[in-house]
Length: 417
Ligand code: LLP
Image (cartoon, rainbow, N blue to C red):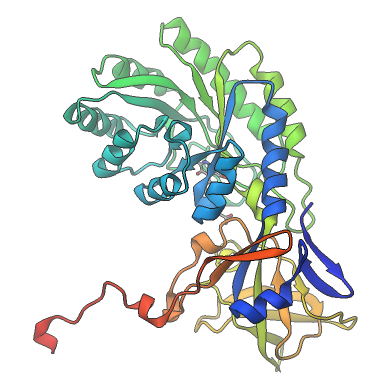
């Protein structure tokens, strides 16, 4: 369910015509619906309300501070993977005690920032990272709360680039080596073990890999407890998929039910790190048709490119497209391409689309997760605006970058002047 609907053949976001926003902020832009974000957060979080848990939104999926604030207001925390994401979460007012820090390559200065901010836990992914964290915490005369990220060797059956829980992936600690690292950590003066974490991949459309991973983690926790290691938190990561096309992922309600069943008697606070399932279908990318041309193929050339939404180019991902400003019954097979000087710059390939003409507005659907956050300035294109609709109102939550923004921080050394 989302709040991008049609009235008299024109697309609305909640109660605001999308065309009206385009006239005000120009194109392209990302457009988020506050009602959809709220509804999706609650749909995910509410089914866990009868057990101790924290839904730590995966900041990397969508990191605008207005959106992080919206989730914080609903009781959400944040899953972060860099000092920059920590800064964003804190600026948005996320409670540090609801922040978990994941990722294989945290630097000592990032660890220091996390420690001084008083975050809930570091999800540590290697022995060397543990040593660096012990050293950093000792220097600050603090204790670092630590969960180790376990790699359970489970195939999440998703795109290879976003599978993270298989033995061949760079993530986590192999489950058969992990007991040793807990024992090492237990003996460290500035480390406090809090739990176990695990994240096996993204855009999962079946429950079985989650359950398989959870069963392995459960057995592992039992072994740790037998060795008298205290485990109070179990972090299951994110990964629940959404519908982009024909997929039919489980509803968050079913996901919660299956997890809660497995968790019975575990006596842990559950941490979840949902990203895509909350924001994916809560935003669109609005782009304008510049030109069309037909040779061997039909091309619709729009003003958004792979720098604005890289998912189709990087993962061959499908995003549905809808005409925003009018109804068009005639369909044709076309490629929707951007202005970037690369053949890989496309938003859709060989798709049946309404016949478009110059100045039409197209909505690239399901663009809320890993859309703006993966955008870049490639081809020196200013990053686009982000707009949030709330009922009848809309707010520019990030202004479009200017040419001046593009060269911010650059300088010409004297020898060139
Ligand atoms: N927790 C950790 C440790 C993660 O690495 C991720 C995603 C998440 C949580 C959130 O996963 P989600 O619930 O959003 O599936 N750029 C790719 C997706 C990369 C996912 C990276 N990690 C895409 O556009 O499909």
